[in-house]
Image (cartoon, rainbow, N blue to C red; front, side):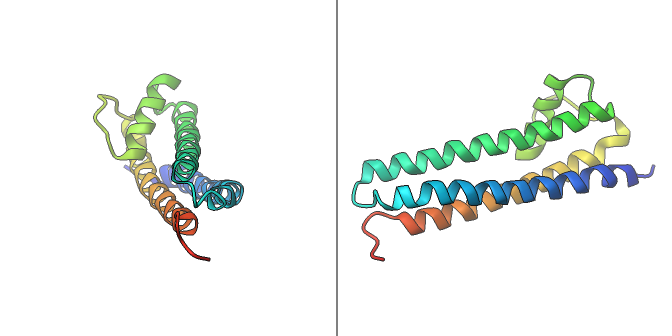
Length: 141
């Protein structure tokens, strides 16, 4: 079995999603971090600002999972969009407990998405760390 086609579709999508993720997080943190940082003397507002970052991150990960789901349906790897969304979110988060499987010829594509998800969650963690460190209440400078 050749998995060349999995790489031909999976790798460009993974790279495109990572570029989108970084660009979106740069915009999100530029918009929210100065706002959160100006609230550093108010713990409640700081927490609310971090909550907004979390909502933005969850939305971003959701959109990225939907892109993978669309690819699975388009390729015929899964029968419908609902099943593809369930599979995609399971693969992206490495949860994988749904009883949904890709067609045999597309199995590597799911693994590529799982690796993409790990990288995306790592990038999200890095952005959160930087944003929180910059805006931490009581921090000087």
